Length: 157
Image 1 (spheres, rainbow, N blue to C red):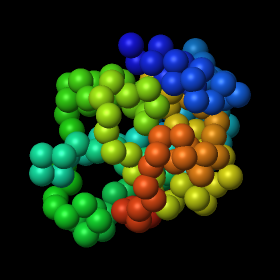
Image 2 (image 1 turned 135 degrees about the vertical axis):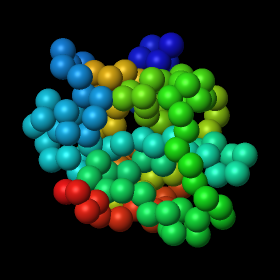
Image 3 (image 1 turned 45 degrees about the vertical axis):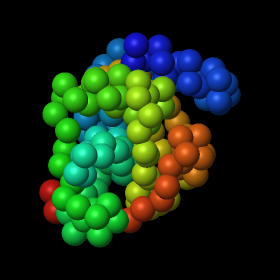
Image 4 (image 1 turned 180 degrees about the horizontal axis):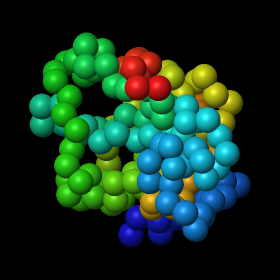
């Protein structure tokens, strides 16, 4: 389903966007940045979370970490990452290919303001070796995302 559902999503809502396929894995931020020749921050990572009984997606730039205090403030509770099986069941996408497009179930999507640091970001497109180039504002508009501030600069970068 995954890559196919993303293809269907773009065919219906944004036919001008082309899915980029790579022979190399782009399943992590650093792999994707190397394959596409961009800085890690331009890789838009989609994180699957649960707050209480609510599942949701947060899209951030690739070189930031979620800030637990900000998450608690924005979502009203402690956020927990979903396990790979739950991610696949809810999104239809495997870990490494998770994106906010062509979801298996309707989930609220939030875009972190960190994405606005770039004119173009590159989220996955439903598989570990596919991506798209898209402006952050257009990404948010297409998936009806709300903008939030829930990240911090990673100490590992």
